[in-house]
Length: 108
Length: 122
Image (tube, rainbow over all chains, first blue to last red; front, side, top):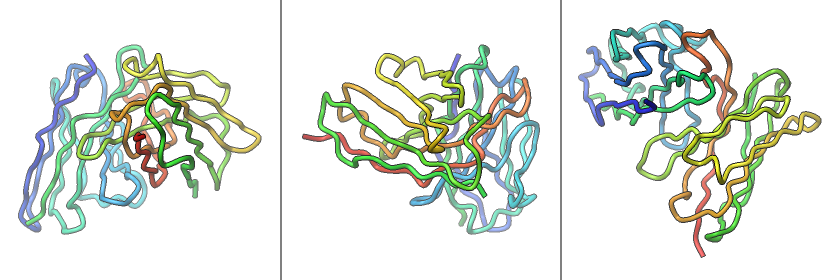
């Protein structure tokens, strides 16, 4: 299946921890990558592979996976983390990729 | 630092072909997959497809019949053509580099363009 489901929106108090989940059959076999989208800006890769952060991404971003669910956790959320977040995975052939439905994170 | 820049018409008429080009600077286009991704207003990201510098392509099955991608390594550019467009194809179109990590992860998108809005309207 090429569907990845995310909660539409979550909120977190400044400095607290928030978890964003991504569910789908492909995640039983493959890791997700995660992207941050802010209006008017190019999307940013925040996590790839098994919990790898690109250079420049703060270590408050981490991910984990269990069964058919991948989770992106922001520990100590900052105001600048307010954005839309999307997961992405591959299919079994390795020839196609697909995005999750996206989660809007609001930092209160 | 690799940079990507989309270019092309911002307005396309229904039933016509949308054409976009992505110019890569700060690095070689060779030996990578290059992807197109779009986001309709108020909706999520959709992977359109990818092309390797050899010209090998993979397309989203839902768009495959209308999509053609090409690459020009001499210009460090790759392109997207989407035929028979409708209002549903109105979206911000992004180009991105797809980098392979491993079998369990596949590819991830490490560099993105700023995106370009394409509106389908008469």
